Structures are given as structure tokens and as C-alpha cells.
Image (cartoon, one colour):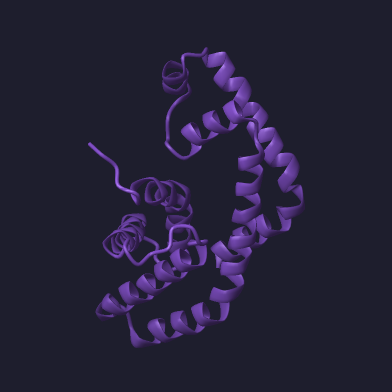
Amino acid sequence: MSKDKYSIPYEALFRIYFPSLCYFAQKYIADLDSCKEIVHKVFVSIWEKREEFDFDKSAKSYLFTAVYNRCINHIRDQKKFLSDGTIDAFEEYSAINMDTDHLEVAELESRIWKIINGLPEKCREIFVLNRFDGKKYAEIAEELNISIKTVETQMSKALKILRDNLIDYLHLFIIFIIKSLW
């Protein structure tokens, strides 16, 4: 199967942003399956418009905005199940908090990716295979032809580096936790 000029950047966009976009959508829609469907539709839309989409530019803002808009549309489509007051309250809350939340998430995500991209090559590869591809340590060890102990060591190293470098962002984690409890 041959890959065209869009498949690698598109696949990278999907792998990098799909989990965080699903998490972001859950701020507005409680059902995880609906969130995944919404995010998937955004990526399908990008794929359908790939001739016009500039894969070299930062797509983060576009993706978060598109997911947000689709969440709002989903809620409006579902409003027959909700009272008008609930919809109005949600729209008011989301209009106030969207910009702040988006910037905080984008700042934190940007920092996380800088740290991940700064990891030593093998360490980064193992981390991405585990955290973004969902592979178990044994699968990674087999795929890379290394021991499970090496995978464990490299994952510990990656997590320590992330922890050490994200300590300044602890306040954002606390804010996210507090806001998610509302």
C-alpha cells in the first residue's frame, strides 16, 4: 500500500492529538463514545479537505476549535433531551471558559510535547509506543527487540523527566481537577 504525501503528517496529527482532543471534548460532553466520535469526525473532515489543509502549520488551534464547535453542535442536536435552561446555562458557561481553558490546555500540551521531543531517542520511542499507541511493555520489548527490563527503565526515565519538568505546571493540573469537579 503506497502512502501519499498527506498520510504521514495526517497520521502524526491523529496520534498526537486524538487523546487530548477526546479529553477536551469530555469537558463538554460526558459520554466518552460521543467524544471519540466527534473527534473522529473532525479528523475525517481534515482528511476530506487535505488538499486545502496546510499540514506544516500548527494545527492545534484549528483542532481544538473544531472539536469545541462540534461539541456545541452535538449538544444542540441533543437539546430535545435537555431543558432550554440547561442549554442556555451550558452555552453561557462554555463561552466564558472556552478561551481560558483552551489556552491553559494548549500551554500545558505544548510544554509536554517539548519535553517528550527532548527525550533521548529510544526513551521517546518507548514512551510514545506505550502512552500513545497503547502498547504493553512486553509488546514494545518484542517490537524493538529489547528486554522488558529495558522498557521499564526507559519508561521510568521518561516519566521522571516529565515529572521534573512539569512541576511548574502543577497549578494547571489542580485547576483542571477543580474545574472537572464542577
